[in-house]
Length: 495
Image (cartoon, rainbow, N blue to C red; front, side):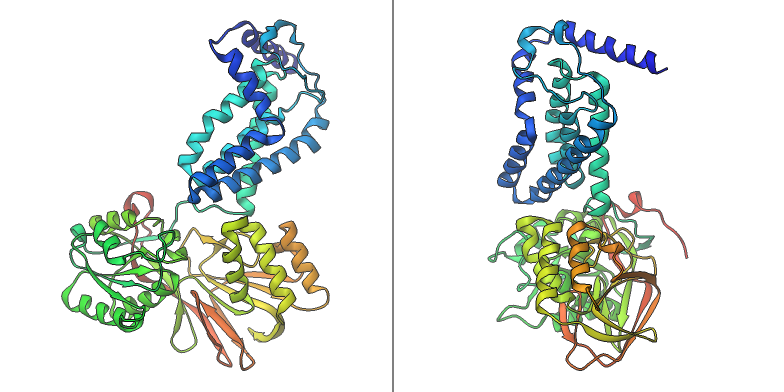
């Protein structure tokens, strides 16, 4: 079988060598040389980041995937299968590279890098991935066309590159995985947004829209029949009062409550919607829109689609203390500073480097706290609890696939001897989840006692002083939220 595959591989190489594609003799050798040492892909990443700020994450993931694939190819692949390069006598002289590679032939490093970059980009942005894919395929084919690799070398390299990108996604999840919230619920259809009362937080600042954004204009462009009430800022009413009054009106008159703002504003809106038992429409308009993103809402057009079609899902809400609640995250200790620093650096250097910088700053400048968790005393740097299971490893996970699993995702960074060094080393190596000073569990209820006065807690972007003790628990599928394509992408699971 091995001999048969080898003969087939060599026959395919000979077929490519004999065939002539008009224009390829000038283009493909140059393209192949441009990809040396990843220069072509680094240039493509820089161009993407400069052309569209929203493409920076895709560019960074593409480069990181390329680095992982290149390391795997050069340290393992090249030395595991020591295959000789093809004899280039059958390849026309005009196609040959001026400098022939000296390393072994299997697998193709250029193909691995090209496939890794294109796959990494596509995992973050399907549009940019589609733009990069033809270039990556051309680079891979050029390695056979110029006579430096057999077709099997190219296929193996491409497979290795795709695998590297998928492995990296496991360590650093993307934002493209469709949410899998569990139960579709009936809500009113609101054509054009008629019956939707949107409370817009002027102080939130639409993400990427600048400081002078007009919330009313943005909302009415997507939902022209919706009623928009602006609050926050210097002159408007307070956000909690405006949301409570809007929810009361919706309860009396019918329709739905809408909120335009970031995660902190959405958390307040969820409290008002629960108190009056009305459906909620989340319009992403803040610096951080994690809850909207986990619902699959990236733009106002996504909300408009769901509102007009009457598509919604039931999601969990977590509560703590007497009247506190959160839809995203809760934390005690240094987590508020960790997230603040990570979000500050993430747009500049990417999520993983930003997490390392944030961990280093926090562990250097802050002190741990003592807590009694479910009856056991601990000294911790932080205690994190997510509303439902978060994807991503470590202490600052980024997204959720299921918003109705009935679980609290609890993660703890323990203090103690060499704890700072171990936490920093784990963050730097990407192995924090396996560190002896890191703990994680999925639970339905958590009791925290013995909290020292002055200890801060954070929930959904808000910061407050923690009470001496509190209990975290879930309200299963308590909140009805409009969700785009809910009835076609999600499976209803009756309870």
